[in-house]
Length: 163
Picture (cartoon, rainbow, N blue to C red):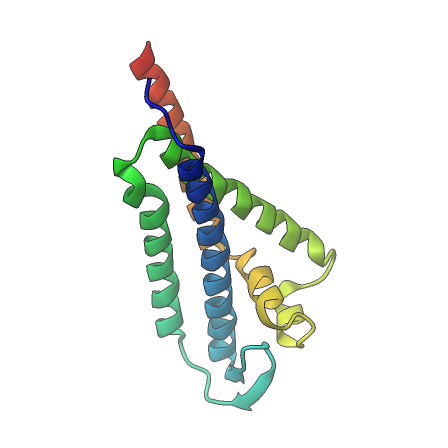
């Protein structure tokens, strides 16, 4: 029987959680900036309007959101492919669980409030606003669903091999 060190599982779990936070924060700030670019506003990192510009298509932000999703999927799903099943499951499961917790907290943090309005008027400055905006991004939801599918696939595949 292959023994898995608890330290490896702990590192994998923390890595999955950190990946979740970084992914949501980066997608959130890029989404806030994309919304501002589309409407002609210039925001600082506290999500406060500091200037006005001509509205334009946020191609750079949209491309960066896509690249961040691909990078996160690589980190969670493909990079740990050479590790043992428990380590792979620890990374992907902790990513899904922590992302789910962040989504639930952000959805419930402002009941009845429009997340775009709360970011735009500065009531949710900094990372709070970024996470709130990311919780409404379909790319985040899709990635969490795909990684959840990966977890289920890994579990069913391992059970099929053991039969």
